[in-house]
Image (tube, rainbow, N blue to C red; front, side, top):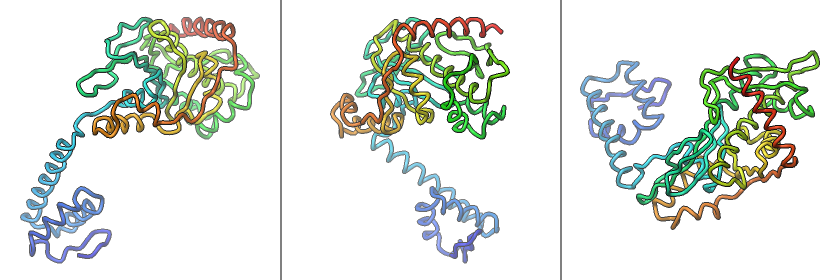
Length: 323
């Protein structure tokens, strides 16, 4: 055969065993799929060859599934569960288009207060570990919407950079409710609100208000978590953790140090659980020793400031969710 945009088989029916071997090795890869596509498009495949390829594909897929089952890779872990495991089992925030705040609470099923939900974090050797969960439905999507859809900046990173250059939001407030408001408010019918605009408001101020809003929404959930378990540190993960302004605002709003991992917490959590399941690590507690913390940001504001600002934020949300 020769490799070309559409591969040219000399005669695919001449040697069925060679075709089977090539299919078993290559069909599950990009070159293998290219070969299959090229043969079909150039009508170089006979009916027998197509049937043989289909059988080989099924055999390959079956063999891979049996191998995975044999190796013990049949237990999935959700993004949020692996994320909280990757944050060493502490209270963790995963920032993406939306956000999720999960706190590991142990083997006893919790009855969380403050509008939070109990959820299974993970299961190892038949032992179930529980967490409390609070959803923040809009996070990075807010910056995306403001920058690209409303045209306030070229992209979310540019808007966040502009927000870092102003001292505050100049009185602008944003309710980040592009998909309703999650915990602890649970107002799915709420819509996003931008308030407090004046002639002096610039895109940078609106960007700063967006970062403030993300931080205070997470602080809403942290305050609810405190009604069930103590919170001493908040470990964060996701694309938004690359913004130092948001990390500082989050530490002030939550009133606890914010720690950003040196590696992706979701990937690290999944890998750590696999290591425990494979017997490479003896217990789940080893993750705290083996996955390092990349950066720790201490709160700069005192507790009186945080409580006063949180009350102002909550009054704004109470009014805005009904608009």
